[in-house]
Picture 1 (cartoon, rainbow, N blue to C red):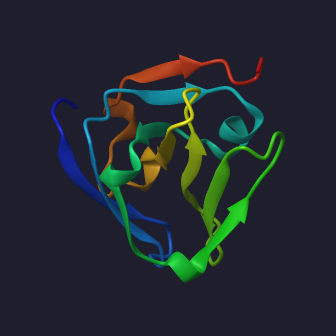
Picture 2: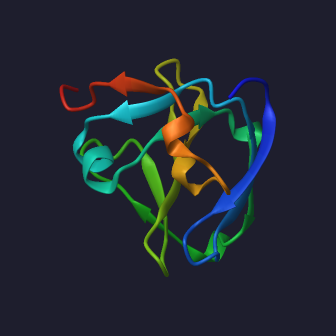
Length: 119
């Protein structure tokens, strides 16, 4: 996928909905414990490129390990839609679960391997 596009998406049950602008230039294939067990593939966005359109009250936060990444799950269906965290330089970032983008074809995306297991 090339060039910035406006994408919409959400959780499985539809309570949580978002809109974002992304080029999907980098989509992770991380081998850490949570990404492996949940089948997560993230792309990273500046906060101004992500808008939560519905479901703020339906989100449940999940923290683990160093408790540095705020994983946001729908409390109804359990799908992790996005996470909030900080880049190494301290700036805020949104990690969007690309599987939650409407109409996405994961097989058509180039995945970037990330060795999260060793961190």
